[in-house]
Amino acid sequence: MGNVLTSLTREEVTEIHHKTGFSDSQIRRLYSRFCHLDKDGKGYLERKDLRLIPELAVNPLGNRIIEAFFVARDDGDVETRLDQVDFLHFTQTLATFRRTEANHLSQSNAVDEKIRFVFRVYDTDQDGYISKDDLILILRSLVGMSIPEEQVRGIAHRTIREADEDGDKMISFEEFKEAVKNIDVKEKMSLRFLTA
Image 1 (tube, rainbow, N blue to C red):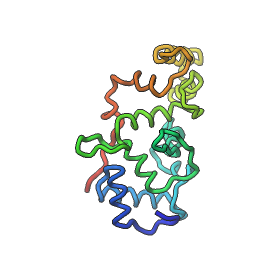
Image 2: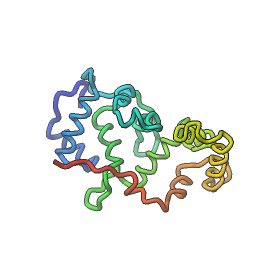
Image 3: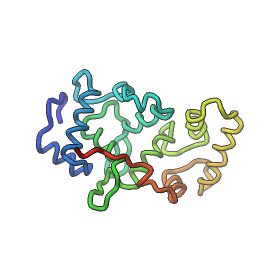
Image 4: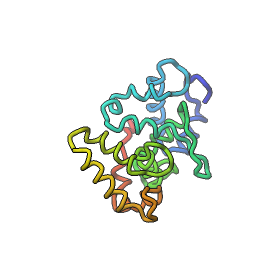
């Protein structure tokens, strides 16, 4: 997809469709949004570009969501931190939120990917585990100072105690997955992408 984007080729649209499940029209709309965010025409986005999205700017977890965009995973599940996001990675990350339909299931919108995205948001120090400190940071972001510190710490402690199956006082991805197994992740982490 090169360094500077001018337009998408048919081959690029087809590749993105196969990797994400987005329709051609959805891909072209996302491309338009990507170009709008890429004000300098660099062909990639940086964190500062995503901070211009109004919905993320007002979201208490906006910075954590943005950070989750800047992670790439290879086939061996090894995660790499990125400094920039190209259009393909942008669409693959957004595909995490695409509704899961049996006939349009892609790796990007599989339930495990949806859970992994939330896990990355909660893993604030990006060490592969959710610790009590990670939970306290997230809770504080969500509730501000409306709840006393002791109560926030108590909630974090109880959450760790309930989800930590191996006794290491942290929540691994597998433990997190088990903890959220009764939540309808497919529905709760899905957005409707317009088709017109």
